[in-house]
Length: 125
Image (cartoon, rainbow, N blue to C red; front, side):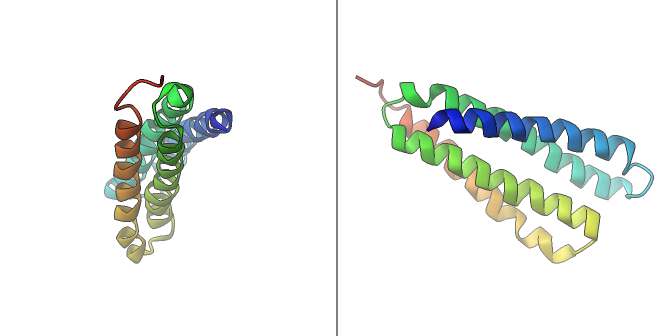
């Protein structure tokens, strides 16, 4: 099960590189400095959590609770889609109400990291 999240984590991190390059080279001329900074925040958090997905996937089998590790991976992925996705959509479409969705992704990130913390509370026997 966790092998799937190695693939997903690698894809998320790779897409972060692609989106970062797109932002730096294609959006520099079309977005305001503030919107470009928002886009870059989405890219940065996508990369952090892509690497987090890889970490969870690689450690998942060694943790006390495989179920919590799986939920950690799921929540980090959901957080990435909602948080970074809403920032991308906000900056590319100018639809300001999408900013209201972004904190839901942040809560998913926090819940994912909490699940990892709880999954690691004691070694697997």
